[in-house]
Image (tube, rainbow, N blue to C red; front, top):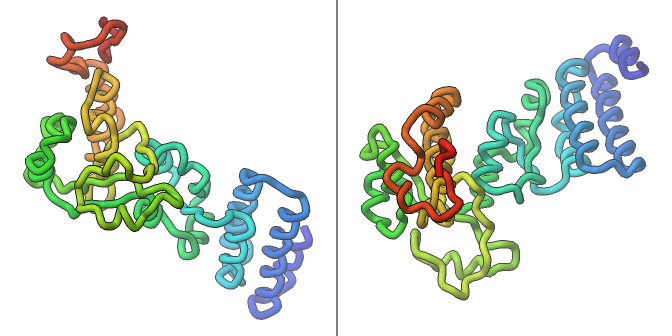
Length: 275
């Protein structure tokens, strides 16, 4: 109420900016004194950005945004669009959940965007990338990845579909210098440091390229319908297939396993539930 009355009484200028800045720093103080957890701090960050956009006309926001981010969001947080959250978690794995800041409103996203790293920075920090190439060329080059022919069969035009092969970076303290000396696409040595594990979905679509993880079990050697389902669903989503069309294809189309149904192990079932 005091903030609203102050906003109505003040004209845009130095005094108005000072009142806005004091309000943001008061939010930081409240969070510190109350010992709020991450979820509550994320809500405060969301609320601060909404108030900045809708009430305070972004006054003082640029001056205090980084301070707010450090105090409320913490280090290493990246802002992602709500529609991309599940895709990123499926591709990078649940271990990155604490790094994601997902604004709920357009206004909060607009205010935070210039001040926080985004999806591109998150991917670059989490993954190592090979040079871009077509899906057909990648499949010829990496004959050891048995899942790639299944992706070629799903592609409309594998000779023009641009992809990049990638894998998780070494975990903290895991010897990144040794990984840097490894040739692109080469398999890690048995004594190599552990890497950040792959998520359950082996493909991710971006604005420029389709990313494929060579450290995913489904890409290395798909075994059973679970891996084939992951390849099929992830590749179709990454290629821009509408979710409704993807679900319809999985429900009424041919079994996910196709000719591999005969090789199912005891207890395994196809996508249609048939043993």
